[in-house]
Image 1 (cartoon, rainbow, N blue to C red):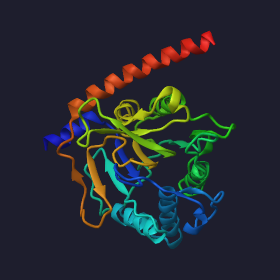
Image 2 (cartoon, helix red, strand yellow):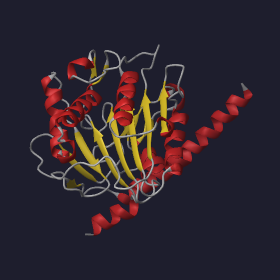
Image 3 (cartoon, rainbow, N blue to C red):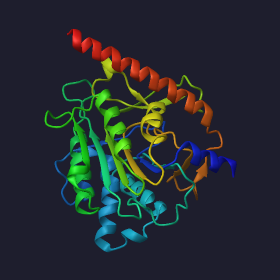
Length: 310
């Protein structure tokens, strides 16, 4: 099919993104993720999406059914965990390929490649809208990746606003994603996790049906701006090498399509399989991404000049 051919040409890597909610929904911050029965909750607070998926993964790891768990099983288990704790957000899977969601989900590439990760947690300490659980989300995810999936700490980049890790500024987040792409090789496994605020801004490239670009909100967004889905597509999605398997977990508001991937499955009980987004505009997305990339380079130059002057 022409759509599938264009998708593979536009996005060489196989990329799966799990989000905790639709584009129009907000994502919850939980005061005590211990209620999700995580083995080591790393503190009380955390994101509902991260806690829900880790609870489902650990449960299936304990009972020996992890390898046979399908994408449908995983997302619906997330939905069950969320509803059971009083949250109505609906998990969603988007992908760069048409996949059978009734087949076992896959996080690790079928090879001996390197496992790499970028984990981002932003509490916005001292700012309006401060969160309390995003650092815990990163710690919980890091523990799962290392203890269950065999990731090595040396191949993990962590950004948190805790004064000890790389600061999750706009520039540092984009640089972390760019470095991840540059270091990844065919056969590698990549995992990215973002826990923080997400937002929406008016679409200027014409690739969004609802008229809005979804965004990640970095620590310095008031000065440097938000990171749009068009930019994420240009920096992280499109250049990821063919043969890499990347999974991304987005625990933030309005994150359903924040990587601009052309296939979608929603765990709402109505959708029975993954669907093609027939309105997906490959051309408009590419043009918008290039413009965003040029703007980002311009802002980067301006900030560098200001830093020198100051």
